[in-house]
Length: 288
Image 1 (tube, rainbow, N blue to C red):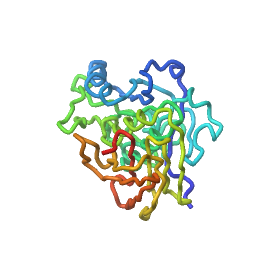
Image 2: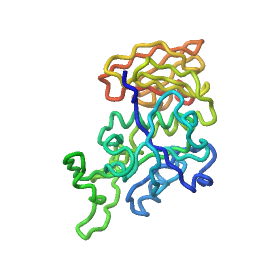
Image 3: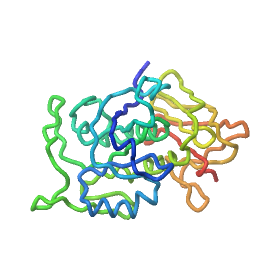
Image 4: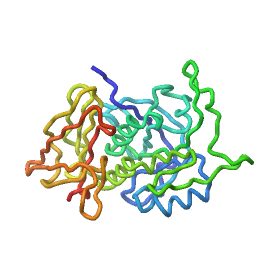
């Protein structure tokens, strides 16, 4: 049995005692090496409208942990209201600090999206999403020889602006994980379920898990090497919901998978281990 499902990092910042975000917005983003002008523009055009609570520039990693059923205060961590939680930062992306090569980053996008989804769905802590740039990674004997490389730059060494593509992703070497549909939609999920209890945990004894957040949201993940085929208690009212991982609700229609929840709160889920995104998330605002 694999004991490790996904990895996350736990950190603490003094700013956590007064994060200066709007009520109910408990996800922020780390725009690493962005120019101030680009940060301001991103706040106006994307972060605010999509439910992000704020922007952070830097935080030191404190502890490497494994994700299991009672992850969070049940592990003896500091109280949730004083904790900042994140999957990766600019240091450990490059193999520095705790976790080493075990850190999940955008280089393994499939696993990374699952890890961030779990973090954003779980009630523990004040969550932070990373936003990175690519560099010419060159791993030799487990060490990145190019970990010193800075952000996309002009010939004079100045940082390049962050261009936004028509599909809302970033170009010119900027990764912009916070703009990935799956992550952006999980920020909305977190805002919808804010204050709801962690409940209805299920696992198969390996790497298939699910849980709900009260009667507002539900997440199921298949990180096994075989298909997930289960009927699970979502905790949600009966109805048809749009999966916000494979698509999203637009003008009352779903662009991705639809999940039918019965009057008893149960729904059938089938997730192949071969899927690009082997997880499903539904919430009150994705009901059709």
